Length: 251
Image (cartoon, rainbow, N blue to C red; front, side, top):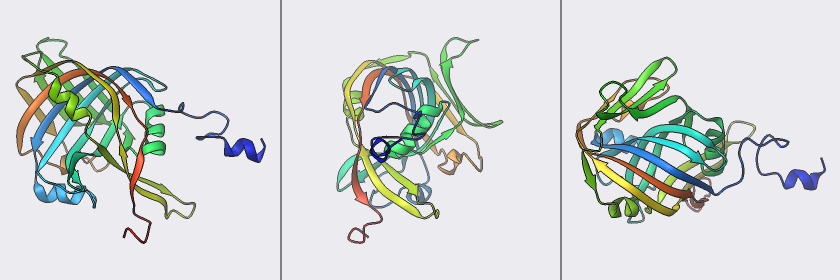
């Protein structure tokens, strides 16, 4: 392989990358989101500057992605935090756990998604049939459990379209060969070509359990605020760097 060929490679391994180039379209992407109030001090410790916390709220998400370009069919679970950046409201992706290598590697390398391997599941209860179940298992142990009544009360889709069009933020960190950060950036990314097919709310529950390697319970549940289930199509757009932590002029 010539030097010019190496320069044209976009991901590792050179001979067989783990993921295809983006952007990536998702079809029939299904969300179960439980919004809850948490400890403000814990939230302040979790969110990096220059992002700002403006309310003590976390969105706990279970996501089923049956048809996604380049990534296949997989499920995901994690925590998203409402934030402000330069006065504009958006979302900081704090933690994500999923069961598919390609989006773990691609998400981390391209944008900086905080992805780890685990076993999230989202489904309709097989026995009662009357509620959605979300379960996140890390290794041998369950670390999150959510329920929501099945299609209890239908909602309009416009608020979800607006929410999905809000900016999203990540911290991308890639080490150099000496284990010091070579890249340390605040990345902004969009969802584009968004449609929402249907949306529902209803009674819900959420439990988080302590785990040293999947610390979702470090943002404890104080009070449930809302629960929604919706199905959408969207494209995950490529990102842009909005803040460079290693640039002396920005620190």
